[in-house]
Image 1: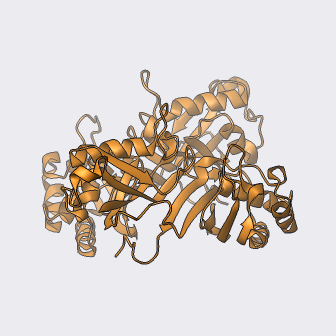
Image 2: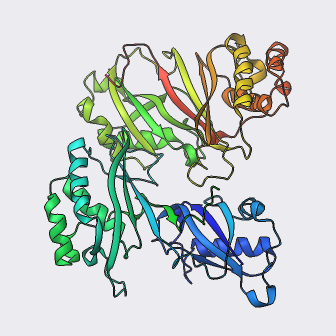
Image 3: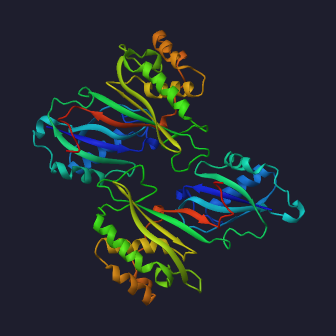
Length: 264
Length: 264
């Protein structure tokens, strides 16, 4: 038996989810909180690395004893429904567990993913906003209804199963750069905020942020919606837009199919 | 001529608005940003002190040269509509000017106030939320529809012109503790958030936070709505609820009458 947790975190203070020897990570604080609460060393595996500064409201991570064989299948000393509150009592306030359920040993939080959905938040009000400054990219210009329509026209040309090599930052060792982008959509949330949703079976390094940077070039008229198809075709990172800042990005939801349902 | 500014700030890093010799304040960063942008020393007067850690989205402050006589009436070197952007360029990201207009020399940001409205944000979701942790009081229990109805029943007994001595923290030198409380109302914002609005011609020291603490005692059944009238009558701080934490409180709006309209 493994535990699967749903986790929210403000990524501002962390160098991403995945453990690093020389910088604070969400995996590190989570592993030590869970081990403290369980009373023995546990190991935590995330659904994604997430970049430094990126946030999450629907991150998923599995938990098992660091030494699973000696602990046996009923290793967890806490009833599943009480696990979020127990772990939250040991976590800093920028990380919170918001759901827990049991899953089988062959479940893997990364390999079992059907799709993940990110949201990229853009603040386009006339003035900067102290309250969203850490969670939204402050554009300092207005996204008109026309601009959002153009962004969605370009997005339509990127949706589908394609080679997204042009939308991958250098420094990645991935060989297969084909992904199925199921949703890419800009939507106005309120007078001052626009969100870009991006859903795929997997994402390349910095892919959402480069997609957003490219859509913002279309919004400003620097690129046309047709350029989006050309960028895809040429597989050239230099043709795509710049990488939008990390702090606007948030992992919204991970879908593992109907059996894994935290809200059930 | 004076300038009147509308200001938003995340109060988390400040010991309130008003200047203090030994702690960072909003007035201090605002005065130095404005003086830098204008090119000569300016003096800034706020509509309120606000407690340490309290936020604002509609704070108002007037600006004039520190030496008004020698500067004359057309002292401001920047067109009024460009003032917010100019000052924002010199401010830290947790303070932003969101409006500017001209007013007469006899206007005073504190004495000319008709009413001020605060909002107190309560997070009552099942789990803590990393994204609102600095802007909402995390209650760690649910406010049911019945509880909110009771809060509003108690609030109804406090609305009006009363002696609010029971709702003033000690340490204040105010002699007249009568205020006209025009609105006190709890309203559910979304699944996880409730806001308490408080509007009055003026507020005593910690008054909104003690009002909220008292309403929360009514919500939990520790007090009844009728107790609210008794607390008022006895003018005894010890009968009222505890002081709700500062970080849930935000100054929403200051009303100076129809002539002063930032959104015109």
